[in-house]
Amino acid sequence: MTQPSMKIDIQRYRPEMDEKPFMQTFEVPYKADMSVLEALQYIKDHLDSTISFRWSCRMAICGSCGLMVDGVPKLGCKAFLRDYYPQTLTLKPLANFPIERDLVAVMDDFIKKLEEIKPYIIPAKTASNEKKCLSDGAYKQTPEQMEKYKKYSMCINCGLCYSACPQYALDKKFTGPAALALLARYNRDSRDAGKAERMKIVNQEEGVWGCTFVGYCSVVCPKGVDPAGAIQLLKVESSKDYLIGMFKPEQ
Amino acid sequence: MSEMNKKTYVRSHEPIFWGLFGAGGMLTAFLTPVMILITGLLIPLGIIDQGNFNYQTLHGFATTWYGAGIILVLIALPLWHTLHRIFHALHDLGVKRGRDLQQVLSYGFAFAVTVFVFTLLLQMS
Image 1 (tube, rainbow over the protein chains, first blue to last red):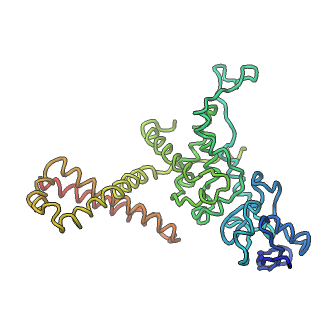
Image 2 (image 1 turned 120 degrees about the vertical axis):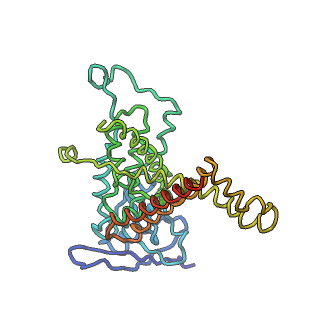
Protein backbone atom coordinates (compact mmCIF):
# COMPACT_ATOMS: atom_id res chain seq x y z
CA MET A 1 0.00 0.00 0.00
CA THR A 2 1.42 3.38 -0.92
CA GLN A 3 1.24 6.19 1.58
CA PRO A 4 -1.35 8.80 0.53
CA SER A 5 0.01 12.30 0.03
CA MET A 6 -1.35 15.80 0.11
CA LYS A 7 -0.37 18.98 -1.74
CA ILE A 8 0.30 22.15 0.23
CA ASP A 9 0.70 25.58 -1.41
CA ILE A 10 2.87 27.84 0.70
CA GLN A 11 3.42 31.53 0.21
CA ARG A 12 7.15 32.23 0.18
CA TYR A 13 8.88 35.55 0.61
CA ARG A 14 12.61 35.97 1.18
CA PRO A 15 13.15 39.74 1.34
CA GLU A 16 16.83 39.56 0.30
CA MET A 17 16.07 37.79 -3.00
CA ASP A 18 12.35 38.00 -3.82
CA GLU A 19 10.75 41.14 -5.15
CA LYS A 20 7.32 39.98 -4.03
CA PRO A 21 5.76 36.90 -2.41
CA PHE A 22 5.14 33.83 -4.60
CA MET A 23 3.45 30.45 -4.11
CA GLN A 24 5.38 27.19 -3.89
CA THR A 25 3.78 23.73 -3.85
CA PHE A 26 5.01 20.90 -1.62
CA GLU A 27 3.78 17.33 -1.37
CA VAL A 28 3.74 15.80 2.09
CA PRO A 29 2.76 12.28 3.24
CA TYR A 30 -0.80 12.42 4.55
CA LYS A 31 -1.75 11.07 7.96
CA ALA A 32 -5.13 11.71 9.57
CA ASP A 33 -3.56 12.89 12.82
CA MET A 34 -1.05 15.21 11.20
CA SER A 35 -1.35 18.90 12.08
CA VAL A 36 -0.51 21.72 9.68
CA LEU A 37 2.47 22.54 11.92
CA GLU A 38 3.74 18.95 11.63
CA ALA A 39 3.36 19.18 7.86
CA LEU A 40 5.49 22.34 7.88
CA GLN A 41 8.10 20.60 10.03
CA TYR A 42 8.12 17.68 7.57
CA ILE A 43 8.72 20.13 4.72
CA LYS A 44 11.57 21.85 6.58
CA ASP A 45 13.21 18.53 7.56
CA HIS A 46 12.79 16.65 4.27
CA LEU A 47 11.92 18.93 1.36
CA ASP A 48 13.16 22.52 1.76
CA SER A 49 15.18 23.63 4.77
CA THR A 50 14.96 27.30 3.79
CA ILE A 51 11.27 27.63 4.66
CA SER A 52 10.56 29.86 7.68
CA PHE A 53 7.69 29.67 10.16
CA ARG A 54 7.23 30.35 13.88
CA TRP A 55 6.36 27.65 16.35
CA SER A 56 7.11 26.50 19.86
CA CYS A 57 4.76 24.47 22.07
CA ARG A 58 2.79 22.36 19.52
CA MET A 59 -0.29 22.42 21.79
CA ALA A 60 -2.10 25.77 21.46
CA ILE A 61 -0.51 27.38 24.49
CA CYS A 62 2.32 29.55 23.17
CA GLY A 63 0.42 31.30 20.38
CA SER A 64 3.40 31.32 17.99
CA CYS A 65 2.19 29.34 15.00
CA GLY A 66 -0.69 31.49 13.77
CA LEU A 67 -1.07 31.52 9.97
CA MET A 68 -3.75 31.72 7.29
CA VAL A 69 -5.01 28.21 6.50
CA ASP A 70 -7.08 28.42 3.32
CA GLY A 71 -7.67 32.09 4.09
CA VAL A 72 -8.79 31.53 7.69
CA PRO A 73 -6.56 32.59 10.61
CA LYS A 74 -5.69 29.45 12.58
CA LEU A 75 -2.99 27.99 14.80
CA GLY A 76 -0.89 25.55 12.77
CA CYS A 77 -0.83 23.12 15.71
CA LYS A 78 -4.63 23.17 16.07
CA ALA A 79 -5.48 22.76 12.36
CA PHE A 80 -5.35 19.23 10.94
CA LEU A 81 -4.72 17.98 7.43
CA ARG A 82 -7.72 15.61 7.68
CA ASP A 83 -10.10 18.59 7.59
CA TYR A 84 -8.74 19.62 4.16
CA TYR A 85 -7.68 16.28 2.58
CA PRO A 86 -7.67 15.50 -0.36
CA GLN A 87 -7.88 19.15 -1.50
CA THR A 88 -4.74 21.25 -1.83
CA LEU A 89 -4.10 23.30 1.27
CA THR A 90 -3.01 26.94 1.02
CA LEU A 91 -0.85 28.47 3.76
CA LYS A 92 -0.08 32.18 4.02
CA PRO A 93 1.29 34.37 6.81
CA LEU A 94 -1.24 36.05 9.13
CA ALA A 95 -3.23 38.70 7.28
CA ASN A 96 -3.15 42.41 8.24
CA PHE A 97 0.48 42.17 9.41
CA PRO A 98 3.62 42.91 7.38
CA ILE A 99 5.58 39.81 6.28
CA GLU A 100 8.99 39.26 7.79
CA ARG A 101 9.82 36.11 5.86
CA ASP A 102 7.76 33.26 4.35
CA LEU A 103 5.07 32.47 6.96
CA VAL A 104 6.53 34.74 9.64
CA ALA A 105 4.52 37.92 10.24
CA VAL A 106 5.77 41.08 11.95
CA MET A 107 3.69 41.37 15.14
CA ASP A 108 5.31 44.57 16.47
CA ASP A 109 2.18 46.71 16.13
CA PHE A 110 0.12 44.25 18.17
CA ILE A 111 2.79 43.99 20.88
CA LYS A 112 2.98 47.79 21.08
CA LYS A 113 -0.78 48.00 21.59
CA LEU A 114 -0.65 45.23 24.16
CA GLU A 115 1.94 47.18 26.17
CA GLU A 116 -0.09 50.36 25.89
CA ILE A 117 -3.16 48.94 27.67
CA LYS A 118 -1.05 48.14 30.77
CA PRO A 119 -1.74 44.40 30.82
CA TYR A 120 -0.91 43.90 34.49
CA ILE A 121 -2.66 44.48 37.80
CA ILE A 122 -2.23 48.07 39.00
CA PRO A 123 -2.76 47.83 42.77
CA ALA A 124 -4.67 50.44 44.72
CA LYS A 125 -2.58 52.79 46.79
CA THR A 126 -2.99 52.49 50.54
CA ALA A 127 -3.69 55.44 52.82
CA SER A 128 0.02 56.20 53.21
CA ASN A 129 0.26 56.29 49.38
CA GLU A 130 2.35 53.15 49.32
CA LYS A 131 1.67 49.90 47.56
CA LYS A 132 0.38 47.01 49.62
CA CYS A 133 3.28 45.08 51.10
CA LEU A 134 3.66 41.34 50.56
CA SER A 135 3.52 40.82 54.34
CA ASP A 136 0.05 42.44 54.41
CA GLY A 137 -1.30 39.20 52.95
CA ALA A 138 -2.83 38.07 49.69
CA TYR A 139 -5.48 39.79 47.61
CA LYS A 140 -8.54 37.63 48.11
CA GLN A 141 -11.17 37.08 45.47
CA THR A 142 -14.51 35.28 45.42
CA PRO A 143 -15.36 32.84 42.61
CA GLU A 144 -17.88 35.40 41.30
CA GLN A 145 -15.21 38.09 41.16
CA MET A 146 -12.94 35.72 39.28
CA GLU A 147 -15.69 34.71 36.86
CA LYS A 148 -16.02 38.36 35.75
CA TYR A 149 -12.66 38.35 33.98
CA LYS A 150 -11.45 34.74 33.72
CA LYS A 151 -12.65 34.17 30.15
CA TYR A 152 -10.74 37.23 28.93
CA SER A 153 -7.56 36.11 30.68
CA MET A 154 -7.19 33.03 28.46
CA CYS A 155 -5.61 35.03 25.60
CA ILE A 156 -2.31 33.63 24.30
CA ASN A 157 -1.47 36.69 22.14
CA CYS A 158 -1.44 34.66 18.92
CA GLY A 159 -2.82 37.56 16.86
CA LEU A 160 -5.44 35.51 14.96
CA CYS A 161 -8.13 38.05 15.92
CA TYR A 162 -6.12 40.88 14.34
CA SER A 163 -5.95 38.90 11.11
CA ALA A 164 -9.70 38.34 11.29
CA CYS A 165 -10.64 41.94 12.09
CA PRO A 166 -11.84 43.95 9.05
CA GLN A 167 -11.62 47.19 11.05
CA TYR A 168 -7.95 46.57 11.88
CA ALA A 169 -7.41 45.81 8.19
CA LEU A 170 -8.87 49.20 7.28
CA ASP A 171 -7.24 51.23 10.03
CA LYS A 172 -4.07 50.14 11.83
CA LYS A 173 -4.65 52.79 14.51
CA PHE A 174 -7.49 50.66 15.94
CA THR A 175 -6.39 49.16 19.28
CA GLY A 176 -7.80 45.83 18.13
CA PRO A 177 -9.52 42.76 19.62
CA ALA A 178 -6.88 41.03 21.79
CA ALA A 179 -5.53 44.23 23.39
CA LEU A 180 -9.06 45.43 24.20
CA ALA A 181 -10.09 42.01 25.54
CA LEU A 182 -7.05 42.04 27.83
CA LEU A 183 -7.86 45.60 28.82
CA ALA A 184 -11.32 44.36 29.83
CA ARG A 185 -9.69 41.47 31.69
CA TYR A 186 -7.72 43.86 33.96
CA ASN A 187 -10.51 46.45 34.30
CA ARG A 188 -12.89 43.71 35.43
CA ASP A 189 -10.47 42.31 38.01
CA SER A 190 -11.43 43.26 41.59
CA ARG A 191 -7.73 43.46 42.58
CA ASP A 192 -7.00 46.10 39.96
CA ALA A 193 -7.25 49.87 40.43
CA GLY A 194 -6.05 51.03 37.01
CA LYS A 195 -9.45 51.40 35.39
CA ALA A 196 -9.36 55.20 35.09
CA GLU A 197 -5.99 55.08 33.29
CA ARG A 198 -7.18 52.43 30.85
CA MET A 199 -10.56 54.06 30.14
CA LYS A 200 -8.67 56.89 28.38
CA ILE A 201 -7.60 54.32 25.78
CA VAL A 202 -11.06 52.76 25.62
CA ASN A 203 -12.86 56.10 25.10
CA GLN A 204 -10.95 57.04 21.97
CA GLU A 205 -12.14 56.64 18.39
CA GLU A 206 -9.31 54.11 17.91
CA GLY A 207 -10.28 52.47 21.21
CA VAL A 208 -13.53 50.50 21.40
CA TRP A 209 -15.30 52.87 19.01
CA GLY A 210 -13.25 51.59 16.08
CA CYS A 211 -15.14 48.30 16.44
CA THR A 212 -18.36 47.70 14.49
CA PHE A 213 -19.11 44.34 16.15
CA VAL A 214 -18.39 42.13 13.16
CA GLY A 215 -17.55 39.35 15.62
CA TYR A 216 -15.12 37.37 13.44
CA CYS A 217 -12.41 37.82 16.11
CA SER A 218 -14.44 35.69 18.51
CA VAL A 219 -15.04 33.07 15.80
CA VAL A 220 -11.33 32.53 15.08
CA CYS A 221 -10.08 32.78 18.69
CA PRO A 222 -8.47 29.40 19.52
CA LYS A 223 -8.96 29.91 23.27
CA GLY A 224 -12.63 31.00 23.37
CA VAL A 225 -11.79 34.47 24.69
CA ASP A 226 -14.64 36.28 22.86
CA PRO A 227 -12.93 39.64 22.25
CA ALA A 228 -16.04 40.95 20.46
CA GLY A 229 -18.11 40.42 23.61
CA ALA A 230 -15.43 42.08 25.75
CA ILE A 231 -15.42 45.11 23.44
CA GLN A 232 -19.22 45.40 23.59
CA LEU A 233 -19.04 45.42 27.40
CA LEU A 234 -16.33 48.07 27.19
CA LYS A 235 -18.57 50.16 24.92
CA VAL A 236 -21.17 50.17 27.70
CA GLU A 237 -18.46 51.16 30.21
CA SER A 238 -17.24 53.89 27.85
CA SER A 239 -20.81 55.22 27.45
CA LYS A 240 -21.19 55.41 31.25
CA ASP A 241 -17.81 57.14 31.43
CA TYR A 242 -18.98 59.58 28.76
CA LEU A 243 -22.09 60.50 30.74
CA ILE A 244 -20.07 60.97 33.93
CA GLY A 245 -17.52 63.02 31.98
CA MET A 246 -20.25 65.42 30.83
CA PHE A 247 -20.96 66.42 34.42
CA LYS A 248 -17.44 65.99 35.75
CA PRO A 249 -15.00 67.09 33.04
CA GLU A 250 -11.26 66.34 33.34
CA GLN A 251 -11.82 63.78 36.05
CA MET B 1 7.49 54.98 28.81
CA SER B 2 8.10 58.73 28.37
CA GLU B 3 6.67 58.50 24.87
CA MET B 4 3.56 56.84 26.24
CA ASN B 5 3.03 59.44 28.96
CA LYS B 6 3.10 62.23 26.41
CA LYS B 7 0.33 60.68 24.36
CA THR B 8 -2.90 62.65 24.39
CA TYR B 9 -6.13 60.75 24.47
CA VAL B 10 -9.08 62.19 22.56
CA ARG B 11 -12.46 61.13 23.84
CA SER B 12 -14.87 60.01 21.10
CA HIS B 13 -18.45 61.30 20.96
CA GLU B 14 -19.53 57.93 19.60
CA PRO B 15 -21.43 56.96 22.82
CA ILE B 16 -24.28 59.34 21.87
CA PHE B 17 -24.69 57.86 18.40
CA TRP B 18 -24.05 54.33 19.57
CA GLY B 19 -26.78 54.78 22.20
CA LEU B 20 -29.28 55.97 19.59
CA PHE B 21 -28.10 53.20 17.26
CA GLY B 22 -28.58 50.56 19.94
CA ALA B 23 -32.00 51.82 20.99
CA GLY B 24 -33.14 52.06 17.37
CA GLY B 25 -31.83 48.58 16.64
CA MET B 26 -33.76 47.10 19.55
CA LEU B 27 -36.96 48.80 18.42
CA THR B 28 -36.49 47.76 14.82
CA ALA B 29 -35.76 44.16 15.77
CA PHE B 30 -38.69 43.77 18.16
CA LEU B 31 -41.43 46.08 16.89
CA THR B 32 -41.06 46.23 13.09
CA PRO B 33 -42.07 42.56 12.62
CA VAL B 34 -45.13 43.18 14.81
CA MET B 35 -46.12 46.23 12.81
CA ILE B 36 -45.66 44.38 9.52
CA LEU B 37 -47.74 41.52 10.91
CA ILE B 38 -50.57 43.88 11.88
CA THR B 39 -50.63 46.17 8.84
CA GLY B 40 -49.45 43.68 6.22
CA LEU B 41 -51.26 40.49 7.25
CA LEU B 42 -53.77 40.70 10.10
CA ILE B 43 -55.69 43.72 8.77
CA PRO B 44 -55.79 42.64 5.06
CA LEU B 45 -56.90 39.15 6.16
CA GLY B 46 -59.65 40.70 8.26
CA ILE B 47 -58.39 39.16 11.53
CA ILE B 48 -58.09 42.63 13.03
CA ASP B 49 -61.00 44.97 12.32
CA GLN B 50 -59.94 47.62 9.82
CA GLY B 51 -62.12 50.13 11.66
CA ASN B 52 -59.53 50.29 14.44
CA PHE B 53 -57.05 51.71 11.99
CA ASN B 54 -59.06 54.34 10.14
CA TYR B 55 -57.91 57.96 9.85
CA GLN B 56 -59.96 59.31 12.75
CA THR B 57 -58.75 56.66 15.22
CA LEU B 58 -55.10 57.09 14.24
CA HIS B 59 -55.39 60.88 14.26
CA GLY B 60 -56.91 60.64 17.72
CA PHE B 61 -53.98 58.44 18.82
CA ALA B 62 -51.41 60.83 17.34
CA THR B 63 -52.87 63.82 19.13
CA THR B 64 -52.64 62.31 22.61
CA TRP B 65 -49.32 63.06 24.35
CA TYR B 66 -48.44 59.38 24.75
CA GLY B 67 -49.49 58.52 21.20
CA ALA B 68 -47.36 61.34 19.81
CA GLY B 69 -44.45 60.14 21.95
CA ILE B 70 -44.75 56.57 20.70
CA ILE B 71 -44.92 57.69 17.05
CA LEU B 72 -41.91 60.00 17.45
CA VAL B 73 -39.80 57.25 19.06
CA LEU B 74 -40.91 54.66 16.47
CA ILE B 75 -39.85 56.91 13.59
CA ALA B 76 -36.80 58.69 15.02
CA LEU B 77 -34.85 55.87 16.72
CA PRO B 78 -34.85 53.38 13.80
CA LEU B 79 -33.81 56.30 11.57
CA TRP B 80 -30.81 57.12 13.79
CA HIS B 81 -30.00 53.40 13.74
CA THR B 82 -30.15 53.26 9.94
CA LEU B 83 -28.04 56.35 9.31
CA HIS B 84 -25.42 55.35 11.89
CA ARG B 85 -25.16 52.01 10.07
CA ILE B 86 -24.90 53.71 6.67
CA PHE B 87 -22.22 56.09 7.99
CA HIS B 88 -20.13 53.15 9.23
CA ALA B 89 -20.83 51.08 6.12
CA LEU B 90 -19.30 53.88 4.01
CA HIS B 91 -16.10 53.48 6.06
CA ASP B 92 -16.28 49.69 5.64
CA LEU B 93 -16.61 50.12 1.86
CA GLY B 94 -13.50 52.30 1.88
CA VAL B 95 -15.17 55.63 1.04
CA LYS B 96 -12.49 57.70 2.71
CA ARG B 97 -13.20 61.13 1.23
CA GLY B 98 -15.11 63.65 3.31
CA ARG B 99 -15.72 61.64 6.49
CA ASP B 100 -16.80 64.86 8.24
CA LEU B 101 -19.28 65.66 5.49
CA GLN B 102 -20.55 62.07 5.53
CA GLN B 103 -21.11 62.38 9.25
CA VAL B 104 -22.92 65.71 8.96
CA LEU B 105 -25.13 64.37 6.15
CA SER B 106 -25.94 61.07 7.95
CA TYR B 107 -26.68 62.36 11.42
CA GLY B 108 -27.98 65.67 10.03
CA PHE B 109 -30.65 63.80 8.06
CA ALA B 110 -31.70 61.77 11.09
CA PHE B 111 -31.79 64.94 13.20
CA ALA B 112 -33.77 66.89 10.56
CA VAL B 113 -36.41 64.17 10.20
CA THR B 114 -36.68 63.86 13.99
CA VAL B 115 -37.30 67.61 14.31
CA PHE B 116 -39.75 67.48 11.36
CA VAL B 117 -41.81 64.66 12.90
CA PHE B 118 -41.71 66.35 16.29
CA THR B 119 -43.04 69.65 14.85
CA LEU B 120 -45.66 67.83 12.81
CA LEU B 121 -46.96 66.00 15.88
CA LEU B 122 -46.92 69.22 17.88
CA GLN B 123 -49.00 70.97 15.18
CA MET B 124 -51.58 68.17 15.09
CA SER B 125 -52.45 68.35 18.74
